[in-house]
Image 1 (cartoon, rainbow, N blue to C red):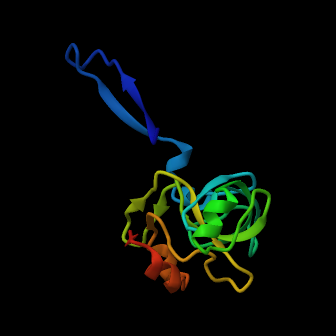
Image 2: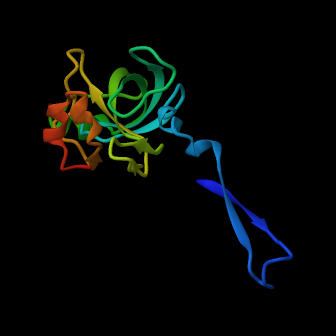
Length: 163
């Protein structure tokens, strides 16, 4: 719910007509786009590294919250079976592995410089190796265009669609 509406039943209004006063909720304040992902947030892993879900255990580079384009440390909660990962030639990722990841989508709306807000249906990340490169060779689904400002061109080239 983006905001609430207060309905006035004023005697000077005609019968059946209501005046609606818009009362913004705390989530629609100008800085509401800052609080996105934090400790214990669950993310979908959208690369072909073998992981399915991951849980954020640390936000890197200071701050309490991670935004799109930020690096986080995750623990893999659910992974594909080793046979599937080995057959595709991808580095194996097991349940319980601790990895670095990059946030590529967030459910919390993000304010763009032109005044538009963008929001995705899920929280998603891509796993990174020790050199900071993507662990998988494919990115599934769309990624946010904010990655361009953070210099993640490799991920943008792997993604099928950038919004």
